[in-house]
Length: 503
Image (tube, rainbow, N blue to C red; front, side):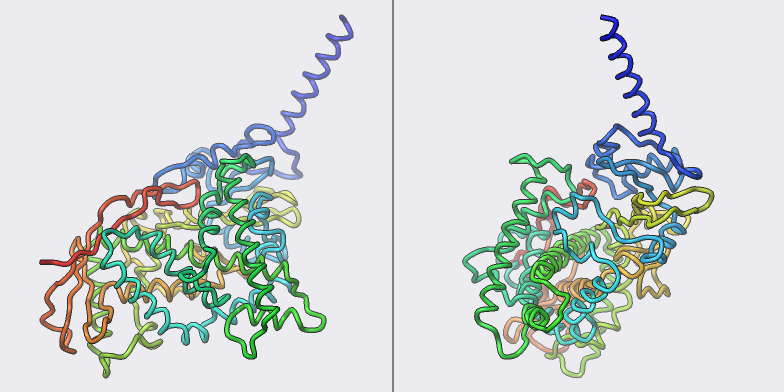
């Protein structure tokens, strides 16, 4: 009996000692304040807890109020320094490759592939980045602009004859169709197997609690990726069996690279890259567009200024039948302010991870080597000392502000050497869609112009003067529009709209 008591006491002492060291990690200096939560799990449940606010996520906001803008935590057993400090964020991005490197939790890596572009460093990352820029760089976008406009106008026309349209789903389908066509010449509408369905399943479980149990969101996410990768692999095999004489899409570029002697590209890397590009382009941009239309419907004065800018573009055209030009696109000053304000408040990317390569001192605190650093863009974008009334939608706050990349106070597209290579493509998609939405789309010789006044009117024009337009259609929200963050942004009930003919 005495032996059992001694054994039990020893076990209790060991566990108590272990828990103490879990909650008080060793450090050569002073760790930021904070809690490490429960052993193994850390504060994962609190981190993944859903909320319906446009404000700083409760997980971060509550700890900022208690500990300040830099604090420690643990998520799924991983020690993490959370940064809501613009100076630390800037330092992390600036020192990537020197003091920090890109890092994401094992669950994220499992979802996006062990050899996805976010996992690579140095030369390999730059190599893949240049590959992507060959498709989504400014020169390619200039050539893509007319097709983006035609696609947007055609989709708007299709929506006008439907009873209702769920905007998030509709814009996601539109963008996926265009992106898949440019990447792999894939026609979703005529394909026997629907590639996007697998991406939708993948998206629903992204940034969810990692339970590999059938029926769980994370499990469905894994299955969606598995099925999508199988389809991409089959498409690549078909292209390899029947190569094209000239390059017409990104698959052709990949095949050229795979055939080069001494190439660093592998088929696995190429497929993981393709998966990330398809997902990132349609999902993030469709969320931003849904948010944008919601903001327009709630802010008539913003709509008025946006519409005036785009009608000016139409009036200044020598040929009213011509499509949108690159010069016109670059002249959309207020539109870009509107886009900046939309992505600032949307905070589609709620966290950005890096890992400390060695021990780092910052403002009296120590970041131990090997610890993750979680940059929190919402805390920066909603900082009242930098943005007056930060929860108010006000595109004019960007007047006179030139942003060509990330800054200390704006990181909607990431920052540093990993600034989103698809940022320009997303801006083109948003700007052109808004242009079509608030001005016109063509159907034969008829030009229909969309305007809002709590509702969206489609005006038909038989002449080329853009005057005396009589409303023929109107737009109105039907239901939905509420958001949920888990912590990624979602519209659980969708955002349903209706385009109707006015009798």
